[in-house]
Length: 312
Ligand code: CAA
Ligand code: NAD
Image (cartoon, rainbow, N blue to C red; front, side, top):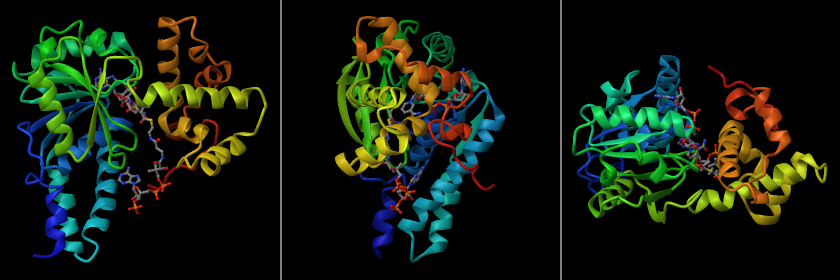
């Protein structure tokens, strides 16, 4: 057998790490949800991708198809036919829906990746708790909210946890698995195994603000915005400085645009409300201004930088 078969196994149901979770529902088809849907489908799982907007779902299917193509090009570089089969099969495992209750009804695991707002997440999880099978695990991909606070509205608190992925999901190898106060050992183990089954290296973190990565990364991004706002250096020079001086793949302002300035603002506002005396979490007028102007970064074509619209 050629090496392709061996590599391909990582993308199929016979991947090295097996999870009992076979049917996964992802709620939110934006930046994160589409990536999570992709890695689960690549791992041979049946995926239902849910978004309130059918336009978002159409866009997500297109980007998943493109990104699966990037994977296939690498893995099956000498066997394009197998590559096409890989893409078609993975896409075939992804269904879409606009109703979260309908999307969750046959699920073993529901991963929520909607807007970073506690009230909106509460409304959704009440619906999901009522609709998902009793054995299903409910998880949030929140960047900054408390898993205990999100889970306060569900009955199955033992089957609730955090599964925090990183953007771009198909490329970033980390998954933070977050235990809430009432997450059971069985749920925690299932989440860890599932994370490995979709190809991620899992770390465990308590339910603390920002978990590990964002507790370090968000204040760093915010300090860069403040530096720029004060006029201490240009955006380009701040980014070059961190790429060439600290070896980061992207500068902090590029990264802020990549994550989405709305998401950065939701995180900061939430933490400031909770910890008003922490200067690292204080509001940033420039960030507020850009968000108010709809300049959300890469996804809207402008943030700290301007972006060309992708070719259709
Ligand atoms: N799907 C599949 N593959 C993708 C992809 C995608 N969406 N995006 C990029 N790739 C692949 C490319 O095909 C390419 O593969 P090869 O090198 O094997 O050819 C590789 O990834 C690199 O891509 P590019 O050449 O297009 O671009 P790059 O080298 O500039 O890397 C990057 C892009 C991976 C995004 C890199 O710049 C990077 O790592 N940036 C930092 C990202 C980061 O810090 N993410 C965390 C954000 S914080 C967060 O997510 C948490 C939160 O809660 C806010
Ligand atoms: P996004 O704006 O790209 O996508 C969110 C999607 O959720 C939108 O398409 C929206 O239509 C949909 N949505 C909103 N309410 C919904 C509902 N009730 N039911 C179904 N769909 C609904 O956002 P994103 O960047 O993908 O972030 C999603 C979550 O992931 C947030 O909690 C965010 O903090 C977290 N997160 C973001 C990043 C990042 O880099 N952007 C990284 C890790 C985690």
